Length: 292
Ligand SMILES: Nc1ncnc2c1ncn2[C@@H]1O[C@H](COP(=O)(O)OP(=O)(O)OP(=O)(O)O)[C@@H](O)[C@H]1O
Image (cartoon, rainbow, N blue to C red):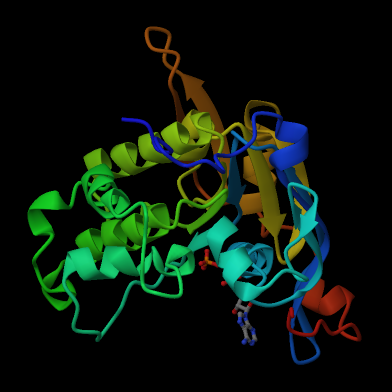
């Protein structure tokens, strides 16, 4: 299945032109810096994993990239996401957040159809209505299409949330911890789907707790700790035993399966606490205002 079968504005082939470029992204809550001065570049057609311990600022950075809050400049294909209309931004950027709780009475199909909203014309017309069925299929929810959203399990809701984002046909897909609630087969299937979307030109940025998934499925990684950028580069280059051990405060050893080349990580007892001073202590005087 191809993801952009009939879309005339399919992501451009040239990664340098179509990708994501974020500079000096900061997020504050009052006078507390949650994330400080993060730069990130992600070419179209790549998957970038955002990793780091609990509270490192992953969700905050992702929401700032989607321009839900924070300061700094975020460009997609050279266009500043902050200065475009909300509708235009919604056509380009989809975000799947961690919380999938809802009390809205919708069927699964209706929920996924909501993802088409930014593309629906003034008369309620959507020339690509088949996308809803494709999105249902892609996240394995076709059999659930007429089920009430409220009746779904956590993992099923997670898939619907991703299905909504797929229906948006974004150029930039931001996903916060998609493996939450998912069994191992579902995790691999969602990560494979993200890889496939990238292969069709989408820029994918995904927060992951599972570093083995990051090693297996991402091209590049952004490593955060206490609101600061610790490393950014090719995943296989930067996610080393030493970096993981330092950032997470554990003993970590990456193991490569000689037969398959797949990587797993063996973890040992915690050593000392991570030594990075939090952004909130470093920059208490700085405060970022909400994005436009
Ligand atoms: N409104 C707020 N006021 C104060 N602190 C906040 C606020 N929102 C988030 N934080 C703090 O900012 C830090 C970063 O939170 P964030 O959710 O971005 O981290 P994360 O890396 O996604 O964490 P996790 O892996 O646990 O999901 C956390 O310490 C969190 O407690």
